[in-house]
Length: 223
Image (cartoon, rainbow, N blue to C red; front, side):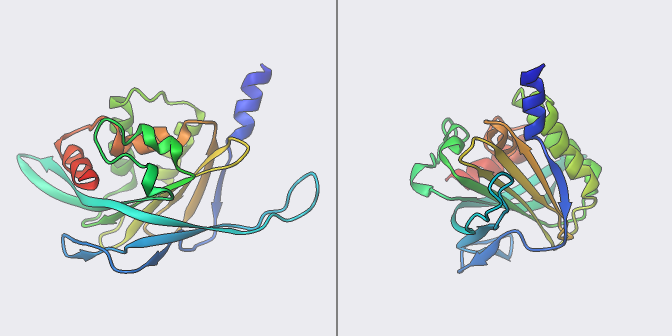
């Protein structure tokens, strides 16, 4: 029982005010007529420590772009363009850009992010359905943290054409892993989980591909 309570205590879901999750920098590749940045920065905000009452120092982490590509979906024999995805990591030198090792190397990243530039409107339920299918293919169990991530996707509502959806994973020194989900409207949800949570979420793009469109996207991001 104590172990269960400890695990549950790691999980936290909060919706914050509107704001940009990543600060984009430089000029990167152009994919499907979308100009992408070369890198990004994320601020790990100043927080008040519960026990000491002292504030931790704000840290800025640079994220380097390691790849981008198109996610398409076959609908009635027609490949429909859904979004352009761009992957960022904090330590590109330890990220393995090959099909067999990419997902496992996520554990070596202090921070990792993916931005989805939507080329069409997709309602929240269908975004969640696509993510859930990918998690199932990768044998990811629907535990508490994964469930709250998928709940955030549904609550985030429609992914809007011409807008960007961001997902950021950050590891803390105490072993807690945090996924921050920013909708195309700018609403931010934060979910905390135990070790391996970030790897589970990023298996959607870097693990076993749920369909040909995801497989093509993964190949493009890792080339």
